[in-house]
Image 1 (cartoon, rainbow, N blue to C red):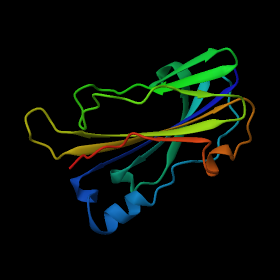
Image 2 (image 1 turned 90 degrees about the vertical axis):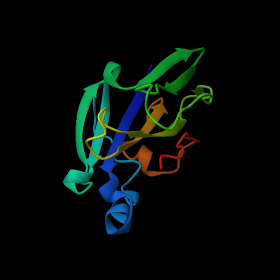
Image 3 (image 1 turned 30 degrees about the horizontal axis):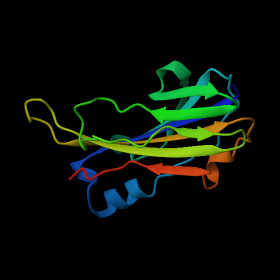
Image 4 (image 1 turned 180 degrees about the horizontal axis):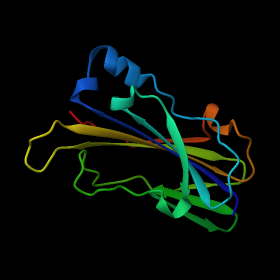
Amino acid sequence: MEVTVQWIRTSWTKRSRGGPAAARRNAVPVGFRVPRMPPSVAHVVRMREQDGFDPHDCQEDLREVDVRLREDDRRLGVLPRVQPLFAIPPRPRRPPAVRLVPGQWVRWQLNYRFSSAAGVRDWSYWLDTFNIAYGPVGTDVFLSPPTVLVDERGPVR
């Protein structure tokens, strides 16, 4: 199975909910060039409010990425896991897995809102973007529009 996985997590607090900080957050890329990697590794990019939303990338074992990949009959089933279960917005009905044929790729986006257990800290937010390609692709594959787009973002106010 030849799969290219890029997982982008953008995280912020209420300080980036409006004004110039929100404009900067909303301008972050949803896809990056992919470095050459072994097949069992994912390209992970983190952009955090406290770093000015500058991208920091690394490589992680594919098993550590919150997505289920299943190859069956020359198709790749893709379904991101929703973690953790207590996050807002609730997702009572999720879309089914996307089934890709070689040469296709999916961009799947999910967002979350969290609060501290004691309510001491501000709300925090995440946006996870999973870019997943099936078959051989170039390093700039995720800079173009996806074959399939799944937008599972919900209200997090």
